[in-house]
Length: 140
Image (cartoon, rainbow, N blue to C red; front, side, top):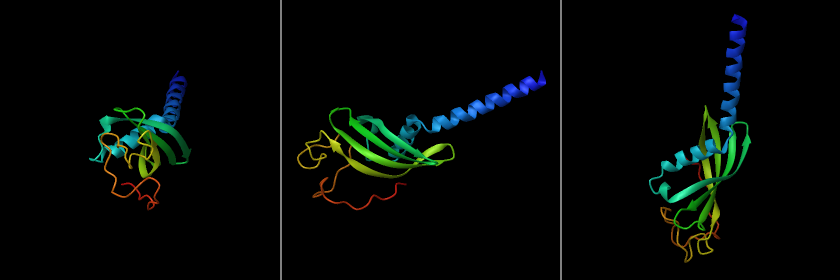
């Protein structure tokens, strides 16, 4: 009976470990990390858009994710951002991000004549999506 109890406990621990690893490689874990990262930016009004995870590629303790932010006011207005994440213990952390462009915002990513989604930070004058931009800096 004692051996059976030990086997049940060992099996339970093994299954718990497997489900934990599977949970870390799930879109929900990546989405939570991105939203936690964005929450630190006071210029964003997260309640004004929905976050959708389009694609995630995992490699060891890193992930490359493509997120799509869709305006709640205008579902045709969306911006895609590519995120690099690193596993920190049992949670994902955003390392860097780079805009992949937008759609449904006047055909110019919300810059030339279009409007930005509600809560989006202002884009500097004279800068359009077609201009070359400096390399993205690592996020904090």
